Image (cartoon, rainbow, N blue to C red; front, top):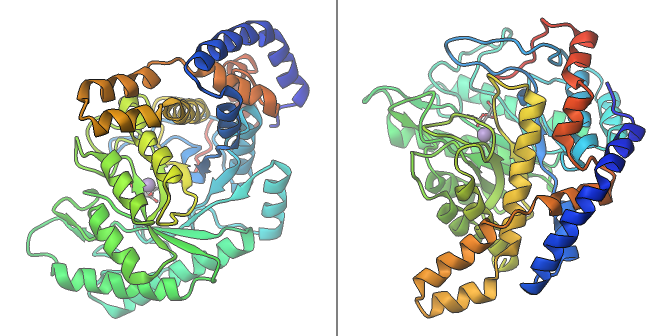
Length: 427
Ligand code: PSV
Ligand code: MN
């Protein structure tokens, strides 16, 4: 299914007057605060977030999975779904694939289809956390960290194969997330496991094309509950440093212990030039993979504050970040959920752009703690939705994508086209 431009234009037409009034009123307020509104709108227009191919179907929990209906049953249909999101928002212009979940049969045709939808391929993801039917050795007890050399070799070769697939599609980076670890004390020799992992990552890194980067994702726990080999940003950063200058840490918001100060981690990694990518989601307890901004929108704003500050004071030459939504949908329509996540990410970004960095620095230098808080919360409490709507209007996207999605009854049409029983690959 594709959304005709005429439908988007008609939707925009119907909301135009109300939006224009709201935008004019917010612009006047912001101008009084010394903010250059078109500059902010331009930045929002440029901000693109990748959609992972595994987030387009129903996720499920270990207790069950409830079908959503109209789920994409092939890579082509997954691209079509991302195309829908992009047509509605003009902010989801990239796809991140998981191999072998999304092996392209005909890479040239897939690339062509993506280009026609205005999409490119962001980081490719390897998968050594599950066994595939045709593989020789099991990853039950780890992959890159495994005690057996043959298993490690198989996992290294898989990563290099993923890079080859990515090259055919025009990707420029690989994200490595390992489920490797131990669920019981004594199961793992920590030093040996980390050493094997380092050597394996170095070998994968050595096999990358020279214009490729590697992102090393960490996770505090799950699926292993006693120890994960790459458990935190420090371990990921260490490994990235040991691999080389095109290896970076990747922060997934759900991969920390509760109450971890993620914004501080972001600040530290950018200052080292070692933050490569970001997986957005939200959580109350663990890696809940909930809609971005649904639980802790203030934390998201504080993270964006560090990202904006970091990129404006980029002495260490941190590269442009690979942004991706890494969520799972058990209750909501995945496309609606992703629309909400895209909105939440851009709201936090826009609010962070409003922070008066000069005033904040002055207040910090005077140890004026209360004033620092006022400055941050002044930005956070501004309703920036008209800025996002303006950015979409200027780009030819829908002023209110969620509303148009509902008005067009997109899910019903997808169910009619694909049936109610299709199952998308993913978690
Ligand atoms: C693991 O929890 C993770 O966040 C990694 O990014 C995986 O690649 C992704 O989820 C999907 O399994
Ligand atoms: Mn992730």
